[in-house]
Length: 226
Image (cartoon, rainbow, N blue to C red):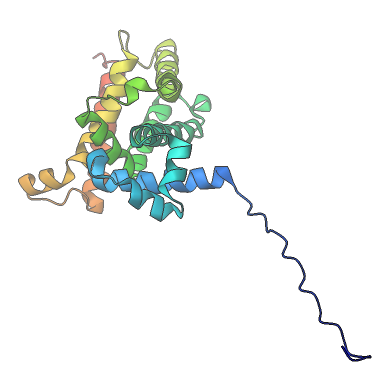
């Protein structure tokens, strides 16, 4: 090499770039994608590869976080119940008079079901499987009991104040609240066809909420004496 010639520059060694993994975010993406997939296709029609692709991950990671398709479906079910319980808890019904609290609860359940059609679809799927997956849930009691406790407390306050009659079963109140709204929405297509009316029109929805409220209140209130 001639004197004064520059030595060739050595290439800088490549530093391995660490890929930051965010398990919680990945898990949340998978859960969101799975909720949409199960809502649209049910448990039988849902495909794990579509869920993984939509979540921006792969099937291996999906199974790493959720073990199996069945376990993922159960987690989705639990998550929709959790969101419902959290939204219901945020109502803070304790400070309301019993009658107002019931009216608020009926309105809440109706509006929540309307705004969250995925809840209706997922519960429909679980009923087709005879609650096979919810029976395996270790969280079920924690998910449902807040709503039932709210109803029980409202009924008790109403009875103590002399507004509600005696002999009320809070479980029946819960079933009635859910049934009046759930059935209407889960069967809206067939009912709209059979009755030849658009059950999802603003007027029809407003009328149903009024009807549901009257049904519940007529069951709870003490009969008027002449």
